[in-house]
Length: 417
Image 1: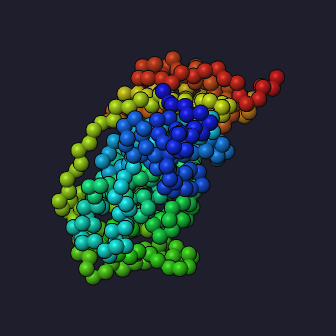
Image 2: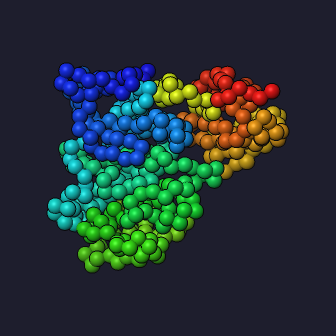
Image 3: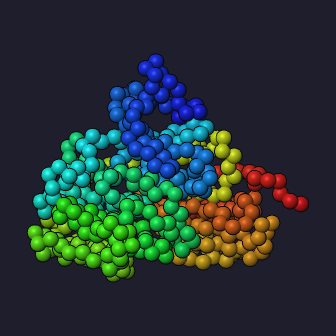
């Protein structure tokens, strides 16, 4: 269960604020949606970082579904090069995400203090970065804001990517499956993100990784200009020059990553098979996650007056089997289905109380051979969505491994007669 530390924690004898078993200390960082504080686990004495989100802002910006999904996935991620999420807590007004705290500073502090890195050292960090990014992409999470501040080092000098899946919480994925909000540090942002015509988060992440590799080896940015318009022009054309000390193979790889057309850009799978990348590469060993996701819904359940506009279940069937079964079940209920990758749009033929009911369905691989299926009301009436799901459920029983209960809940206002 989620710990509930009251309205916003309470003061201890030392005068510090306490949240659950954690005593809060100095502020480590602050953004529009969150604040990160240093904290100490009073039971074990371990240091942690706590990301504090404001529930009111979360609700206002319609970020609930995304936060639930990101936190659910992040809890399942156990990778040596990604900051670990330990637990999630909530009060009436705040959400507290407890994260691993690392002490080695930012990777880019090394460049600031000693200049560019040798190619072998840059490659080692790049291997760790790509390994972390690839793993998270396989779990359905893109970073979307890879930049120097998010690359940390632990006490042993190992790279740790921070804010994976949490840095871009305000992002919204539209029904075309693409992101549409420009974000990120301009120098590290892929051209398709700036174009704002929708972009693939995984391909944009790889571009940022390419910029980071260039900076590690060169000691300066590939794209730089005081005028933002000129900077973007350089990025759109991939107008950069590798310094003479780059090896030929490193240059070739960077040029393939910093390809302005995402359709022509090298993929992460191809990067991992690249001869320059593979030199001295040792894939990390790490544990499989064995965690409960029961606390995710409960962080939103109190005091927010939310209507349940989505439901989800897990399945051990393949994505194709799940899609086929949903198609077969939706037809007799008077619903048409449109497919796009692992996404379905289920559209009602009849007009309901608030127009036609439209249900967006997404399938995420959250662990090997385990899929999370999320059905979310995109348009129409919430109560009609509940009725649709209750009618659909019996036909899906063969593919459901574990289902989230769906309750009869009142929509925000009383139904009109």
